[in-house]
Amino acid sequence: PLHFAVMGNPIQHSYSPLLHSLFAKQAGLDINYEKMLVPLEDFESAVHTFFEQGGKGLNITIPFKLRAHELARGNLSRRAQSAGSVNTLWMEEGQLHGCNTDGIGMVNDIRRQGIALEGKKILLLGAGGAARGVILPLLESGCQQLQVVNRTAAKATELARQCQTNLPQYANIFRAGGFEHIQGQWDIVINATSSSLQHHTLPLPAGLFTQDSLAYDMVYTPDNNTPFLQQARKDGAGITSDGLGMLVYQGAESFFIWNHIRVNPVPVLETLRQQLI
Ligand code: ATR
Image (tube, rainbow, N blue to C red):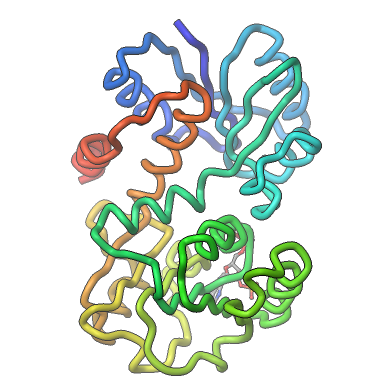
């Protein structure tokens, strides 16, 4: 079998082995995908050993995504460069390569729900690693505007400055600020803060949403109902989605990088949701 793994610390709750075994079944590939709990000081050597022993592909999760980015520098995809972090590693011509599939995974999950991003006004809440990971695919989606707001406004402004430098073609549609700068109605509001994990609500003004607005939380819960999604529904958001689909779609994109086969994530997402409930 082809050998894959996900490295993290902690790792016991990872759904990646399940996802990839279901993708492989669809694709008719014989794979072995394991969870690897890597001690903090051993990450780099663990990656090298994995590929020396013939491993085909690695997913990287908390807390190693920045170190994976550093390890693969020189061979980073545009998505990895823009995200500043890497969740997918592989070898090509004897060299380690890195990509970040989180952002395209989220965009594809939004499209799965029948929602186009072209011409849309998108509000992105948060300016940490999770937010940075989705900015390039959002800008490339054809949206009309992307505003990033953060509790610490300076971190959002810094992302705008990086956009100005690295993606000047999008500088005119990119805005940044603090929560107090949020105005008007939005087509898509994405929560990339870790507020739902702490069961906090966000200081959002009323009237952000319409019946046609999508509220999307990168976090997921078994019943597709995070604190942010509850807040959004109360404020009139007609469509709400947690981030379980993002998890499945980022996996499908990693699977494509490694195996050059496109799988259908929809039945895999259904299976995963059933497992959670
Ligand atoms: P991640 O990799 O999940 O993005 P991170 O880089 O630590 O983690 O970023 C966490 C994000 O959640 C930040 O945008 C943080 O805002 P600050 O930069 O102001 O710290 C945001 N965040 C966390 N808890 C929050 C809360 N209770 N309210 C608002 N924003 C919150």
